[in-house]
Length: 253
Image (cartoon, rainbow, N blue to C red; front, side, top):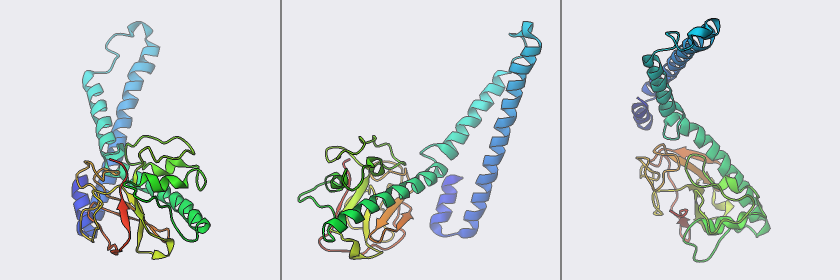
């Protein structure tokens, strides 16, 4: 059902998307109610009844294996569909947290630009995004956690330490300035490759597999030169200008 709703969203069918959202919300409410009911029954049988009849602690006052199995199955379904990193609902929350990361990175880039006559971090011959973005730490930000996407599985970075020899989660457009405009991308979630992208092309993992899977198969975020952040599904939802002397650097694989 989640995958179907996602296809409706990509197809722009607002009516069907709304119906799917309502169905998912009601399903979650029903699941929560069922889990709560089963837990109350289990608690009543184990705690209350056995407290009243301590001698029969191991008698038929216990709950059945079927009830245990149903609780376990429902919890697994809830976790898979609505909580885990591989679920659409879980990744929507992580996409929002990722946007906050990118806005913090932008604040550091803006301060760097002010101190360097409008230039942004650059390392000649850099092959990945770690080298130039590492120049921001610790002078322009001590928050190295901002460079790890909450939707992925990259290891945390040491606080307030440069990370050129480590791995981050974000791609960087080397050669940009903050004057390039609101449609010029500056930083993004790790992409499927470093080629230029046009609207409708695959920019993030469409199946949850590497590369470009910071948010599983549910797209990713772009930070633009004016500081705004936009989310797109795996296929790029908006045009990106083609620029000379700008190189897209992905993070280390």
